[in-house]
Length: 333
Image 1 (spheres, rainbow, N blue to C red):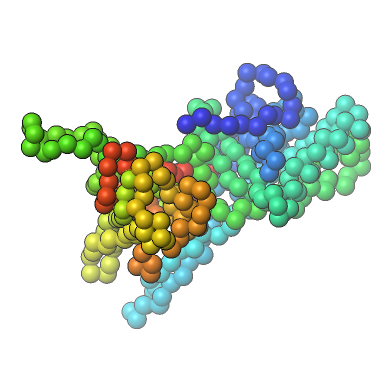
Image 2 (cartoon, helix red, strand yellow):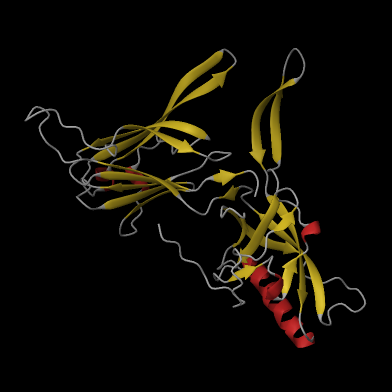
């Protein structure tokens, strides 16, 4: 899938990976970093030639997620964990800014301050901090400016150089892989099972499949259904641990286009189902949330590891397809 990237603020091309030269960052090791503001402008954070660079010794908040635990006291002592709630993350990122004279420094300082603080504008949303490894792998996290872009208030500072200890607040504490993973299942050419001999289509046949989630935590996928179809049920089967051992649990939801007065999904028509937040949209943008089988519908996520998933489609024909897309989520950068 092609990726669209915004231009860098500084034009020099040194042949290095995005963000500059890999530097040792606490909690994660050697990496480069860059920040993308809400407008799409990319700001390298570990490139010495940019006029600003990261003071790596002060970086923190890149490690594992913090959790708030809920437990139930046990009659024989101790407690049993009921729930672990991930908490928002705060990243500390010291940045040193300089210029050949006061005006160049001031221009860069103001630009960077705006790039971070604009994440608090209600019409723009968060920026994205990206950590890249020397092997090319990347992880991203959405950030809002919290505090710290006020300089050091020391003699000689704010003339041609100064540093800001920026605090970035992350409402979702997990890091994501920017490259989406996808699963595609499509109905093959329909033909008689008996004439001239049994026909089996490719591995993209709708039905039972195993979806691998390389994440450290649950991911919430997006589904795209392509007609023809009259109804389609998405089921996940999993084992749940209990005090008595384990039990098999099935979670499912069903999309029925006729529930919103549309009739069967025609060939080539598409519906997109988002699981977090719950949202169902027809190809023209119409809200189809009523096409799900509420209140029984459970918009399930994919647990880390392998997931047993079944797509049961009624009224299918050539071209009927289901696409599942998600971005892996990780504890650390």
